[in-house]
Length: 263
Image (cartoon, rainbow, N blue to C red; front, top):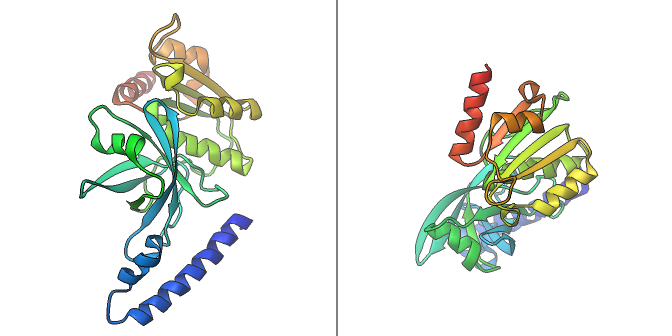
């Protein structure tokens, strides 16, 4: 157990003690009604998180730094969660991948949201959400996680916001000092639209076993979409690697078709 985990457990025990005391004092009324007035993150019935920062990533995306409440049980790198946000008195639920590592020292989590054209919730989260707002959360879930490493080299193919769960995995590996041999091929419309571009380059420079290829699909002489010849040039041994792919449906369809063709 590291220091941050020990701190989280001590803090959780202290908050749990307060919750039990509040429950006794509030009987026969509902304790959460009183607890929420003190701190909405301490409620036992609902998992909530406070927005501590909204960090612009590109012109149409942002990372939300969230402080989760008492019921948060943590996550595995690569998982997602459901987020509930109230807009004009209506609760809307959406799923977003967690982009932070489970090992983050301050116990915060981040989700990275891309504003979709016409998307009421995504545009609200990226452009209108204020620091201090409280969101409702569901527990982390999803199977897009890496099993215990056996030293197998990885190939990660991502597109657009499909990079976010992979970013959690890379950040986790870096935090643990366990970066695997990995080739990451990420597709974005332009360099300005590429999520985490500077951090990815920094990770690749710090970890030589991480081979980074940023491919831009719009403009320029080298604009390209996913294709077999390009993959073979970027990662010649692609057929022998364990593969993770996340991104738009068109990208995933092309990836699955190539692997099916290759047997």
